[in-house]
View (cartoon, rainbow, N blue to C red):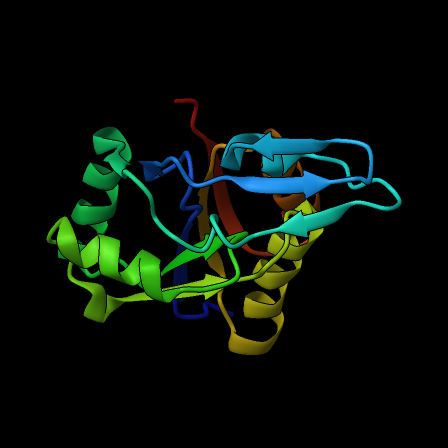
Length: 169
């Protein structure tokens, strides 16, 4: 049976659409680490770690990654489906503000802030969209190889059309 195509497009935010000077600080009692968004994405939490996300909630000194935002703009102009920004950040408002500042029409974009760097959380979010909202055509873009691999592992077990793209900047 031919089902209508229901497409979802999901972009990671940090180090995929933009470079920032927003950091996550990790205090383990002995020392404090200052992690970039890319380092946070692959950081393995250790017992006793205390995270400070206050800086990470801001989009500090943003530098647009034009090669990827060009793709985002093209998809927005084509009306290519549900377009999401899927972020490890805990708040969506600074992301929407930044996108608006670079003249991206935020009325057509949903921002989902997962408050987690666990790659399974992004994969589970995509799976939920497939299972509960009927999406059957998935396009996912991220700079983190851990997130890409988690999404590929989950998507390979589904019966939907999908493409994931790993970007490096």
